[in-house]
Length: 252
Image (cartoon, rainbow, N blue to C red; front, side, top):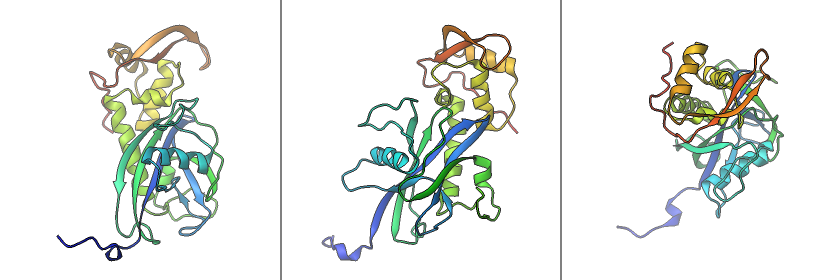
C-alpha cells in the first residue's frame, strides 16, 4: 500500500442539512431558509452548515438549527428543549458535484416537533419560514419572494427523503406523537396522521386502532374543549416505540 499523500486529495468538507418538519394549520410543513451568501444566494434551502473540527454530528445539527432559525432541538450533550423535538440522522449525500465550492458530504438529519413557533433567521440565512412540503417539492420555476422549487443544492431530494422517512415511520412506530404536545386528543393525533400522509382518515376507525394498540397511548384522566364541541379525553404517549399491529398507510 503506497504511503498517504495529503496533496493527492482535493479540499473536502462535511456538512449537516436539516429536514425540520412540523404540523401547522393541519398541513405538514418544512423549514426553509433563504440563502444570504453564494452559492445559490437568494435561493431557498434547508437549514444547515459545515461541521466544525471538534464537533459531533448531532451537536452540529442542533447548533445549525439554533443559529439559522432560533429554534432548538435536543443534542446528545445539550439540555432537552422545552417542546421535546425529535432529532435523528436521515441519510448521507455525497455526489461529487452537489456543492460547487468543493467536495462536500452532507449528513442530513430529520427533526420533528409539535406546532413550532415562527423561526428567526440568523447565520448566513437571509430569512426563514415554514412552508407546506408539497409547495417546496413542486418543480415550478422559482419566482422572487415565493417559496417554490427548485431548492438549492440537492435539497429537494433530501427533503423528499425526509418526508418519506416520517411517513413510513409513523406506520410502525409511535413517532407521530412527536408532532403532538405532551397531552393531546385522539382527534389531534389523527390530524397529524392526515397531515403527514396527506389523506383523510375515518375518525371512529382511527380511534379504535390507536386506543387498542398496546402501549401507544395512555389516558391522562383529563379532558379538553380546545377543539370545540364536547370535552375530549386527553392522552400522552405511552412507552411503546414499535406499534403492534402497525398503523398502515392507506393506499391512495
